[in-house]
Length: 285
Ligand code: AMP
Image 1 (tube, rainbow, N blue to C red):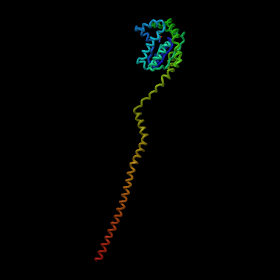
Image 2: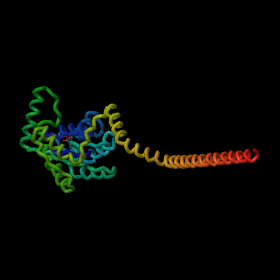
Image 3: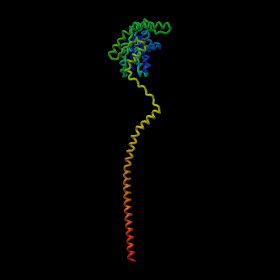
Image 4: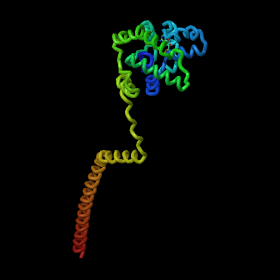
């Protein structure tokens, strides 16, 4: 998931970006945060950017483009990122297109949080007053005068990006003045198609008992088929046996018959011999 959040300072980009980070497991890339870190570290980039930032103007394109080019190539950005505060000019947007194309990456959406400037100014002035009253540390550019300057820079240099991305069919606008949760819900609604189908809820793991019962039921269904196959196999084995049995009994019957007739024949022969002996005795006597 790769996104751009557009909107003037104070529109709530940072808050929504953090929610997207936890929801999609992506990283938030805020050029403002990176520049403030560079200022705090006293790096050459920080030293170059400090005075510009304090006036509420934009840091030169080449500086921020170099920061982003380095950052999106780092491993933690591989899963995706939400750009917050970048790009801020059309040349920065064109540079980003090139950076993404070189890496074979695409943007999923460009979302603008639309706000009413008059209300925004009142909101930020109020926040600055409250923070000062609590003794909290303020950003050096978080005061009404510099804020006016930052809003002017947004109008002149950043607002044209809506046309740039609309022409590419990637632009979507939302009401950034709504309650924070409502804005989050609206962003979720916009991203749902890009985020793809929700992962299917996992089926509860089958218990071992259920698994065995299913196996048994399968076996029961299989049994008749198996039994029929067994019977068929038996039949085919039996056939020759039956045949030979039949043949054997026929043979036995035939044997019995021939034994009977042999007995009859021997009886007849015995009777013949008896009669012969009788005739002999008579002729002698
Ligand atoms: P932000 O925290 O995004 O409001 O940024 C604070 C300040 O950092 C801005 O007023 C600019 O001076 C500078 N800055 C942040 N991002 C950019 C950018 N993409 N291009 C130029 N300047 C930037």
